[in-house]
Image 1: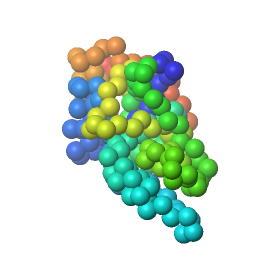
Image 2: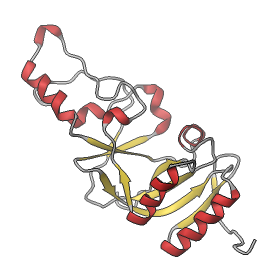
Image 3: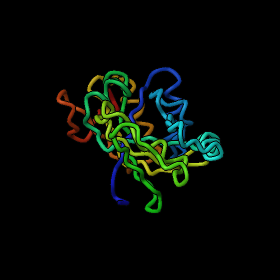
Image 4: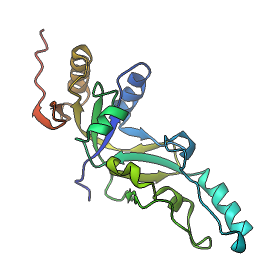
Length: 201
């Protein structure tokens, strides 16, 4: 669905500004290795001892090392996401679109799956997660490269975003790409009202 908007939550603390500028200036998102993600069970798979296929196990172990993952969410109004990934509502959510030919992989929150070692691909190891993570409503894009190209369509400020940071980012967006829609989160974690900041204050 080429018109679907996905979201990336970001903090505005410290070095995060450098990463944010890279996202905005280059229209791209970083694709992480599985061991850089916050779930320690990423890429874990189990094998029945009676049917070990050592060559296939090696193929998966080696193959998953080359997979890079761009994680996004379908939900811009989830309080837990704002709390965990946007510095307790002090950060932002970046709404993006991806190329219509990009393959989107929704996460299945059905726990760890028993795989057929002959047919499973390394990427298949990363589309099943524990139900405890289901609030994230995550989708993933798999890549062999460091970055995923995206189109930024909106930026949502958290209800606790620092006003100075908000003004600075608003000016930056207006100069770089005024077509990006700026929104404000309210205290119910809903996104409402186009942001309207008096730049002369």
